[in-house]
Image 1 (cartoon, rainbow over the protein chains, first blue to last red):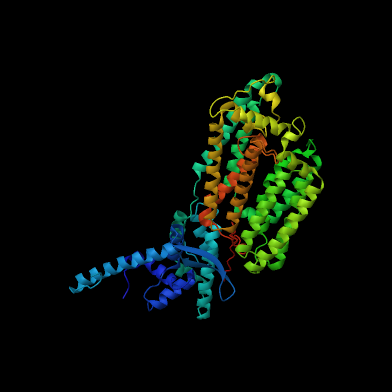
Image 2: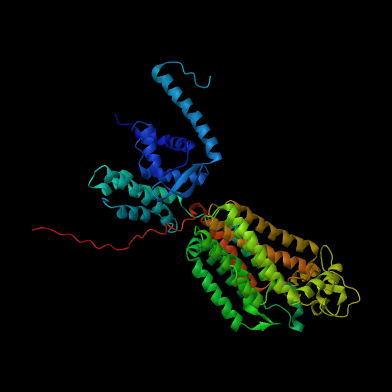
Length: 115
Length: 449
């Protein structure tokens, strides 16, 4: 089933920052890692990734530095800053609240998040 | 337009970005990504790996447009305006306070001063729009050109009281020149460190030949700070501790040699003696300091001071009252409060530059601003102490005193602002130089009939 693009793009910053929470990565590595972790559900276009990363860098949520990757090629690694960590936490909470509310409406069940 | 090659794709992205300086930085990263993707597809056995990699990337026009919105220069209008107005205050003060000295032909020429201010504004904007990162890439060339010009001025510049007139001003640029030199020694190991130190030898020699002790002092101090900063970031790739130890060892040696050569001539020792006891030679070498102290004693908080029992006018009694001792003129004619206000405004400018410097991501950017701030601060400090009667190192107060001095300082401030203007694309990578994006293509198609 094709995933609604609107759903993915809204949460892309959250996903990228979450990836960086576990360690510094460069762009291509992030695309591959996201694909792997989502069981091939999220095919992030690199063209959307870089404007997103550069925007996050401008806001101070991530910082970047040059380092040689395993193949010896220089790569631009991204690192989640302290500010980025707290923003990620907020975004995660907000996402969980949203997802819980959606689930509640769709299934008519009880959502335990935040209670 | 269908993009089949990485080169085509990157060109289209670059075309969407209006700020040319941002293009190579962004393109280099996208190129790395595309090459990785192409290699992966090739490993998986695809024949058209490059085309697939390009398709995987997304629409280049959209990508370029989004990146264009993110990467825009950060205008520094506030600091530009502050610098221009501060220099204008200097122009007005110089012309106004010396206007009555016309009978002795000591008044400052208004036309000449305004012209210098206009050239200074041009120099400020020139520095502001300059690509400091490109200067860093050609750091060695910048260094060599500076050396050639300095040697030229040493040989051909007129000498005033034994000192080379133009070399004195060029030495103000030495700390910035050294920052560019240091930048080129990145990741070169011990050779890089030795090169960095060797680059620091000809510049002090020129300062000694000028001779201009203030320039030498500023250069040594700034050079040391820059080297420590480089060592701290392991700039040469030999470890922080090794670099720091070696830098400390060499600096101590260099400072010792410099001090020996300066003090062995006896000139500096005499200057030091006069600084501490100007009253020993009140009509000789201590005359200026004694006169400054006398005038300051007669000054008021606000308004013109009152000297009693003096038969000569102020301008004939205080040497250099239209140049190095101009701040004394300011204090005497207008009072201590305007002087303090002027110094406070300058301190605010320097503190703000320093604050912004600390937050720079690029080492080169940091060093350029640091060397500018250091040169400005040293000039201000020496000028203020001189005008308070401690006449050791003479220097003009930045932007306020001296035409050529004002132009050079405005250019340096412009250069520091160019660092802030481009701070969101600041990178310290020499290897990923601008990827070659050709302007023209030759397309050859072979058709079989």
